[in-house]
Image (tube, rainbow, N blue to C red):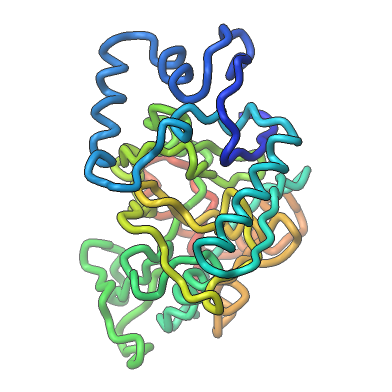
Length: 324
């Protein structure tokens, strides 16, 4: 998609959603114009089924909301202000919600040293804290860490429930898995309303206010990296991270899909993701894939690099490597 601007509360406008479209309104018009056939509309109705049992599902105003790509700067400013007001109302915390754009000339990528990762799960907890994922909902963690047998890369044999107090264990290695920010993401292709898409800097984004909770993207992801939010996040005021990005770590509504986004609110300001910053062994390397002298390119050229599920041909921007 082209340059993206944020949206949250703005109602649908009588302007085209995309170039060449007739003047349809909000999500209703998007579905009508984008699908085109009764069969596709029936599929969209089926996609909404998971939300029917949720008491706080989308309201009529939310359903008619303007698409993310069509917001003007003034609409976005109002949206961000309303999100901050909602955080204050719901959690008693003063938040700053920003709209962070891709940095020109940057394509983010991750490399993880499997020779050094000790399975401490500190990356998991730092990610949850940074991205306002409640610690009492471990099933929502964006990062899974598998304890694996040495010389085995069979994920089916990995143990995600290992005792992190007893690591590292002899004969084991540890493989963290999160969203791989694919160059050819199958998850975005199956979304019936284009609520998820790849950004110019390689991050696969989700607009939580446009997501209809169908979970098609979850089924399409070969890395099991997406999470469906069955409950509204709950926090004490002192536990919430007030530094938020609209497309990243703002509190998500109930009934939507969420995932790792490379800590967009941090990395687009020149910082490392929280998981890389907290890693006790230095096994997590984050950088610009387009920098010929950067650490990512050095690893790709000089280390034994392993791409998870290469047969899926997603071309991920997440690489595993070994010291030897």
